[in-house]
Length: 395
Image 1: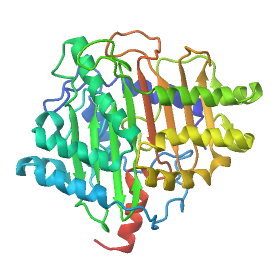
Image 2: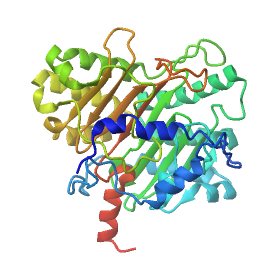
Image 3: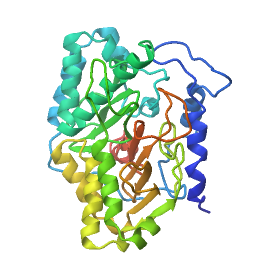
Image 4: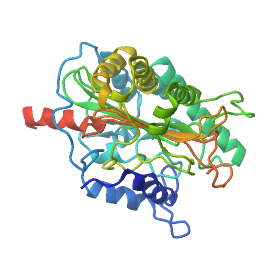
């Protein structure tokens, strides 16, 4: 029996946001005001094993075969090798894990989380250059700029709160899973406040989910990085697509009229989330609207390099008729809103959220944005590909 989708609009996020309870970076966990520590949420998530995001708890099989794409991953491999070689021995030991390690699943989009690996703050100038070169090898210009600007805005909030212990542009941690290879499975993770990138590689196939991007503030009015702004493309593209629908189609897409403080579902420790399809289905769209929906999806898929993004978009386009678009909120020029895109092979959420770091109100704002991308039905972190690889190549 499928769980009603409406339930997931409240419960997971309310629970997660009650869990801001652990000191960021390396340090001791703190339980603030009786809230559930992240260490407990992490432990529970790992203990339940991995199924992946589904509509009913049962992953659809056969969606993600191992196959050649013709797009080389060699530049990413070589950049990762240079990065690892540039670390000190203790840094490298702290930052490397087996390709199937649970470290993949240990991430959080909040600042107050104890992370593994080596942070930009701990690196010297040359190591930071190599770390950014690894990002550049894997990400598009838009993906790289957004990532760096999110880090910069984390410096802005440190300035605004006068709290450089918990916030800052250097508090983003790198880990590498497996040995960089052209044939064996491996990957890397960047984990920090409002920025989490999981990048799995098998041969020339890439899985870049879960991906989390966001910020509070979304723009910097002052300070070291005054003028920096993020998430405008994701915001405007979603609103443009919703407005492209007819009045009747918008009514079908809108699953809730009033925007809540938090509507995002699939954030940290929600790898096995069950979310039923909701909103308007792709087969209800005309050809131009389907094109528009694919263009919206491409904003997020386009965080990776062009060749790998094109491969991924071809995969997504095959399921366009089974792709659902759901909306919460209004559509005015200054509206706050949430939208979700869900198909058998892609899951995207965009959410204007209530202030958390700068002030505490229950009213969502355009100055606090979360967006998350997942590969449903078992292939987040490349898990489906990894399982098939191990079945074929006994380790």
